Amino acid sequence: MSNRMNGQWLLASRPQGMVKESDFEYVRTPVREIQAGEFLIRNLYLAFEPAMRGWINPEESYVPPVQIGEVMRSATVGQVIESQHPDYAVGDYVSGTLGWQEYAINDGQPGMMGAVSKIPAGVPPILLLSVLGATGLTAYFGMLDIGKPQAGDVVVVSGAAGATGSVAGQIARIKGASKVVGIAGGQQKCDWLVNELGFDVAIDYKHEDVQQRLREECPAGINVFFDNVGGEILDSALLNMAQNGRIVLCGGISAYNEAELPAGPRNYMQLVIRRCTMQGFIVIDYLAQAGRAIADLSGWIASGELKHAEDIQHGIENTPKTFMRLFEGKNVGKQLLKIADAPIS
Image (cartoon, rainbow, N blue to C red):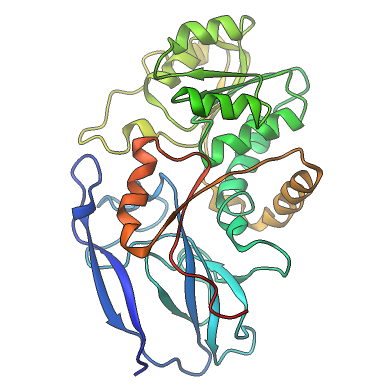
């Protein structure tokens, strides 16, 4: 047994309504010695996304639920600090779904959410948790494969100041949309979308009438609506769609913490009237195509066409608090938590 102790956050109870700190339990357990074919990772950053709220419900979705007493599931980046595996050397930076813990032992085999992968030299590790990770891939495939923006289209993105929405809107602009409208909460987020990311307009859902503002900003209708929110905002978009518009269902954060699911969209018959399509997707269905997406995203970052932001909190003790920031509307860009510095230079 090594003398290392592993700080871990376990799922303690199923949340009832809004997720709480008390739904998780912090424990410290000894880290065992690695065996042949294994390597030990020191996690450096944890990533947070709204979909994690669904992973702690009892119902199975596209992945099995996290069980009571298990380490809370999340994407991480870390560094290999010990290895008895031929493909992973001490000092390698890696990304994977290793959860809310300081250390993880791995054998390089694919797991529920894929295998641990090495981060190429020269790539900042945190980008594999944000714009070059699941966040960026979600925005890329959702916008391009389902939204299919064309030159001259009017594109609207809800949850636009979040990690996925901010990238999705920029991709629409890169692909020639004539107008990109973001919906976000608060003036600071709206200013960031317009002044930093190049959105044409930002609508503050906290202080403006979204339906009226969409009517004003999109008089000929919305060609592509990329939805991260659901609820009333989706209903407002349905009333403002153009003929043959496309609605991309990426998420529905407005209802993730509701004790009872709200009624579905009231205005769904607009899909018939305006001959629109509405389609959901999960990014894991596109992992085989990730190389193409990462190449395009990297190229846009290098050219300055695509900007990204990471909201970085600090300290393993603040893990549940950092998760809750997503549902309190506090994050701008990708929500991350730094839990350690790289131990090996």
